[in-house]
Amino acid sequence: MELNGVEIPISISIKTNHKTEIFSIDSDKLLTFARGGGHNDDLNTALTDLWDKFFDFILINCNQNIIFVHNLGNFDGFFIYKALSNKFKPEEISCLIDNHNKFIQIILSIEKLKIVFKDSYRIFPVSLNDLCNILSLPGKTNSYNPEYHKISLFNNEQLLQEFKNYSLQDSCALFDCISKLQEMYLRDYQVDICSILSTSTLSLKIFRSKYLKVNIPVLKRRDDNFIRNSYFGGATDYYQLKATNIFYYDVNSLYPFAMCEPMPYEFIRKFTLKEGDNFNLDNFFGFIKVEVNCPLNVKVPVLPCKYNGKTIFPTGIWIDTYFSEELKAVLSLGYTFKFIEAYEFSKRDLFTDYVQHFYEQKRNSIGPERYLSKMQLNQLYGIFGRKHDLLETVNIYKKDFDKFISSRIIKSIIPINDRIISLLMHKNISDDLIDKLNFDLEMKLSNYQYLVKANVAIASAVTSYARIHMIPFKVSGKCVYSDTDSAFMTEPLPSKFIGDDLGFMKDELNGLMIKEAYFLGVKKYGYQYEDKNGNLITKSVFAGVKRDSLTFEEIIKLSQGETLVKEVPLRFYKSLKTLSVTIDNTHVSISRSIDKPLINNKYIPLNLSSNNSKSDSFFNYLKRKILTIIKKIIN
Image 1 (tube, rainbow, N blue to C red):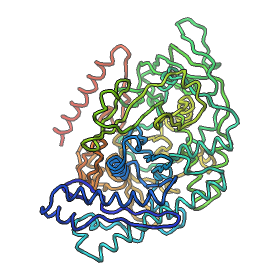
Image 2: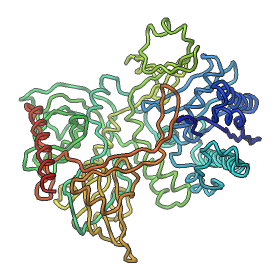
Image 3: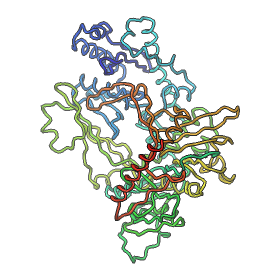
């Protein structure tokens, strides 16, 4: 509930195997404080009493247990971690936090007692109600009532009881979901979901237990640093501002399809290349740092480049690192290369059996089996691209701060109270230590430090193969916009590309045609089509606002250079520094991108020059300013 602009907990519900409980704040103290008749001590006492009741319950009833919290990382963790840190000794509390400041898990350890709070949303990333629907279980008793968020709730007995029922059902629904999922994963894959932390690690555990036939090596840090430069992710680009009578296609499971290609396996050697060296790209498999030359006459560049903090697809000359198979795929388009440094690997089929199992299950199942197989298909590859990060989170007394940080790098200092602070720390790990460790994606070292061990060569290869698969559609001259695994085309695709097998295209509109569409930048587009009943349907994708929330008239205005300001209700603002959450309405400005020049309805690729990148950048900046001025004059 909001109080003086900050969210405070007013109730905590929990369900265990044997008990269901709800703990509520002392409403008299809360109301007295809210009316201005009390002091901060009244509020603090009310909050402390609420958490004490909850902690007393779990200490008695949850010995050696996992407590799942749906959205621990983005919401509940901020309150739970602060309350635990206020209640218990610093050495009794620890947690894992990722690079996005999301709580992964929170641990309470008192002598032989250990209670772990885990984020069920991190494992099954859908809303609780959607998860209940997928599993055919009872969900919420009613939709969330905004009146629950107001202090007047405590003056309405009927509404207060409704809220308590709503809160209790949340915990009951989550308990039922986790219980059913646990049963399914133990039965089908012998995997205990209490032993994992995320969807990716769940997929990895299944892969390792049933489908991994060889040990996957772990890269040394210096090799990881080189190959990570080739890890670009999906390819999204826009080629035309406005298009009419177009078709929308999407690839069946693009990344799983790419995972069936040969993967980098054992590192063989690295070597430097000089002009005149006898190097044959056709006989090489691995990663190469190259100087790229993409001629200006390449109308649709397809090789990605990191430029000014973004991934773009330019013409011109630049230096970057790529997977060898992607370089081979673009040679026929006119690209040329000067080879600088190479890391060679052996190749091996690692994932085909895993992918085929879950794709067939997805294709032939309904209900929870289909959802879970789709989730397992899409989440495995990404874990190999995680960075080698070690985050150590500990609580200490303020008086011990100076001697404690002598050999540590502090990322963040979180004040808990006037005696205790929480430190989130980076800690360096030597390559020798990494080499000695077995392949274990989530390993806890002393005091629950967090080490992600990965192989970015695999992740880079998967995304490269995915981009390669999309090249023919992009360079056909008929593509007006492409996303990671989809394309908007001016003509229907030949039947040989359409099907329900891995890697084939499916018609997203089932035979219907888009009447009119506007593509205003990466992840900025909208279109209109007529459904089978003759109704005009508008679809829109613009970062920052809800999907399909724009009218077609608004999309047209954006295409003409206007800026729209849209209200985004109830946006959450989280502060790791203060361990607080605020909720407020906000406004988002959306407009057309001007990253590329537009001539006769066609976007012109940015041209780079390795010798003149700064002047080129200024030249394009100048062009954008001039175009903006011209538009204003015309309007």
